[in-house]
Amino acid sequence: MPGYRAIMGYDPDRGAWAIWLIDENGRERHKWPIDYRVYDPDGPINGAEDPHGLFVLPDGSALINFDLGDSLVRIDPCGNPIWRREGIFHHLIDRGPDGTFWTWEAETTPYAHHNFLVNFDPETGQTLRKISLVDDIIKKSTRNASIFNIYPSFEFREFDRTPPKSEDLFHPNDIEVLTADKADLFPLFDPGDIMISLRNIHLVAVIDPSDYRIKWSSSGPWRFQHDPDFTSRGTITVYDNNRVGNRSRIIEIDPNTMRWSELFDEHQFSFYSGTMGTHQHLFPDNLLVTIPDQGRVVELTAKHERAFEFNSESSDTVNAHVANGQWLPHDYFTTFPKCESAGQ
Image 1 (cartoon, one colour):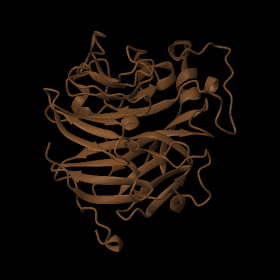
Image 2 (image 1 turned 90 degrees about the vertical axis):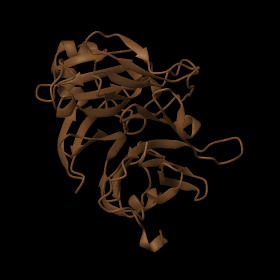
Image 3 (image 1 turned 180 degrees about the vertical axis):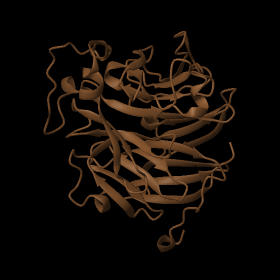
Image 4 (image 1 turned 30 degrees about the vertical axis):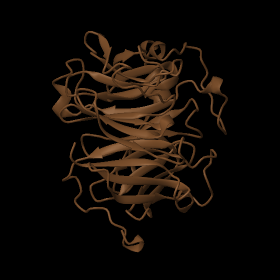
C-alpha cells in the first residue's frame, strides 16, 4: 500500500528504543528516538523501559506508553516530551471516534486486579473518563461477573509490586471503540460501544459504556489473544497468540453467528509471537501484521503474498524486538516529522 509504516522497536544502532518511519519503497524517512529516562528520571516503577502502545499523530508527534514503567507521553519528532502523564498506563493506545484516545491504566502494576479503561485528551494528556474494570463492569451484575469467571464472594486485592503470575487474573491489553461508519455492519452493537481484550481469560467482550452491560463476548477459539478489531465486513478479527502452540493466527469471527475462520493458514503465511502483537486492515484488502517475538512487521496482500517486510536485524541470525506498527496514508501528516537538532 502507498504510504508510510511507523514501526516501534529496539534500535541496535542506538542501543535504545526508536520509531522508524518507512515508506512503501523501504526507505527510512524519519526516526523518533525514545529515551525513557528523559520522560521519567526516577526510572520505571515496575522495572522495565520497554514501550508498547504507539499512535503517531498527524503533526508528527507520537503517543507512547510503557507497560512496566509509569509514563504516558506525547513526544515531538526529536523524541522530546510535549507532555507526560505519571501513572501505570499500559498496552495498546487506540483513537476513539471523537479524536480522543483510550488506553489501560492500573493502580500499581498492569497485572494487578484493579485496572481502568482511560479516555484521554491527546492535546494535554488529561483524563476525560475513567471506567473501572472491577467496580463498574465486573461488579455490575452477576452475569457480568460470570463472563469474567469471577464468583460473587471473590475478594479483589491490591498489590504494591508486580504480583505472581497466579494473581494476574485478567491481563487487559486492548480497547477499541466502534465508530459510526461501521456501526450499521454490527446489528448487535451501537456507535460508541467499547471492545476490550483480557488475555489471561481469553476473553473478548463488547460493552455498552452507558450502563456497562456486556452485549457480546467470546472466550475463544483464540488463546492468550491481543488486538481485536472491528472490520469493514461486519466481523471481528483477533490476533491469536496461541501460546500453547507454536503458530500464531489471525482469527475472524462473525459476532452474530459465532462462525469463525483463519484469515490464512500456515502454508500461506506462518508467524509466531507468544506475547504482544497487532494487526491493521489496510484498504482494500491488505493486512499489516506486527510480530514482536520475531522482530518483524509484514504486510500481506489479499492473496497472502508479502508486499512488505521489516526485520529489526541485530545480528546475522537474530532480530531485535519490535513492539508495534502503524500504517499511515501519504496525506496523513499535516506537518511531516522533522528534527532540526538531529539534521533530519
